Amino acid sequence: MAAIMLQSLILHDLHSSIQKVRKDISTMYEYGPDHPLCRKKARQISAGWEENEWVRCIVLEMISLLDSDDAERRRIALEVEKEMEAAEQKMNAA
Image 1 (cartoon, rainbow, N blue to C red):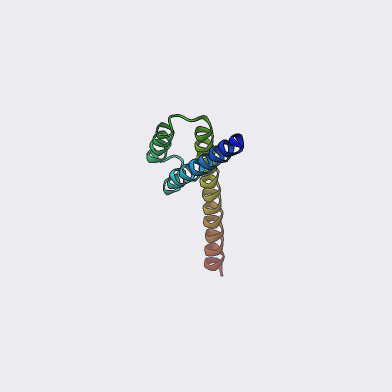
Image 2 (image 1 turned 90 degrees about the vertical axis):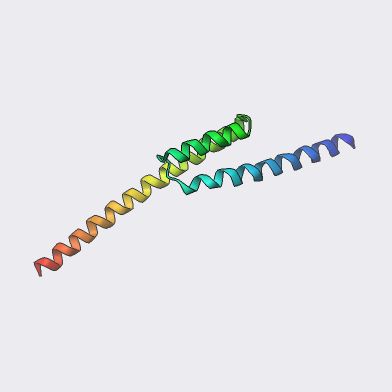
């Protein structure tokens, strides 16, 4: 019985910690992956969680996701720019 209560308490603490980490990490979306404040925020989160291994993994994954999101946004912006230039040339030719 005591083991079950201890396990339940540990799971509750873990769930609570995960929620806090998610809240901390979600603030990284305010910045792009190349932004100095993103790296600073990542260091603050890691230090605040005493360099916890799983928090570090989550922070690294978040930066990776931000980086891929940024690359996708740049690719789409370039594609839209090319389409707009083509449409403008078509209109000027007509």
